[in-house]
Length: 368
Image 1 (cartoon, rainbow, N blue to C red):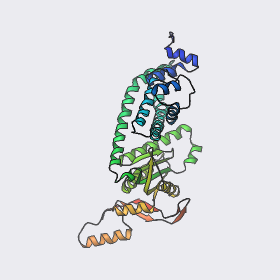
Image 2 (tube, helix red, strand yellow):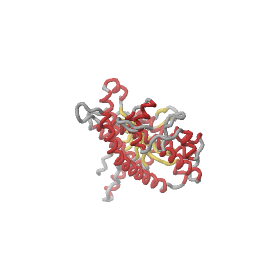
Image 3 (cartoon, rainbow, N blue to C red):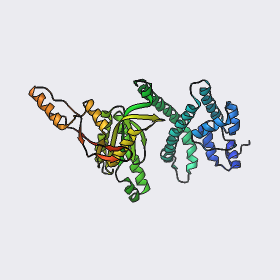
Image 4 (cartoon, one colour):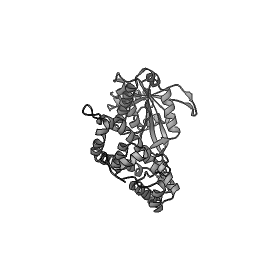
């Protein structure tokens, strides 16, 4: 492989293959290794079958590359490590593929965001006449080690938090099928907005909504499961935490004139967790309640309402709360203090879930 005055050997390789020389230089910088192997050679070097190597590669989210010499020593090492975990009996083959898939899906989104939003802004040409190409490489070279360290730090923090929740589970079954409070928050009239707003304005609105929601969910003890543009899905270990998040979302968005109205639906019950996502009837019910919730309001299912009552976060009824307050006053005692109020709404059929009775959740003035 020869090197000319215009760049490295990878540049020459790029010219021969029709690939952009800068893209190849950036790839080499980021991966820390040159292309050396075809998929077959990488699989043989790692000591795994071509079929398993292909499964891992696709699970990480990458397209088939035929027999192009596009893989590096790092790819071989990754294959060897995953296969080693299987051989040692620490992971089944199916679980190893899941590890590859979950890691690939999560980091793909992170990488896309960093390039689209973060890197593009930093690589604006600082001087007239300079191209973005001329400034991208040195910027990536400076940022890469810092971003890598931060990524590992955040991952370890998240892993510690998740492991803590698992070991506190009551039994092994609860580690997979857990009782959680699940909430959807949805921007009202988003489809109409997409027809009226410019793409850049719409993107800024979605980013502001997702950022605000993510901050409120995290700050109040919940976990953001995913964002879907005009909708966020979050979960919490208890109904009281989820209720506080829902009402704070409504209150915060209502004070922002640039934001549309918000509606929230929540349910409490058994939830199946897979690859960071949540599934099951409880999740479906929360989604359905969101679709029928009034503007700037929160609807919860009966199980959620019962859980708030059980934990004394809400009274069974305002009449009962009034009786308790009167009895406490008579005895010269402090009346019970409730954070939330619950109002039963009309029963109605919900597609796929039968007849449900939503409850309107409000913040209650607990002062006597």
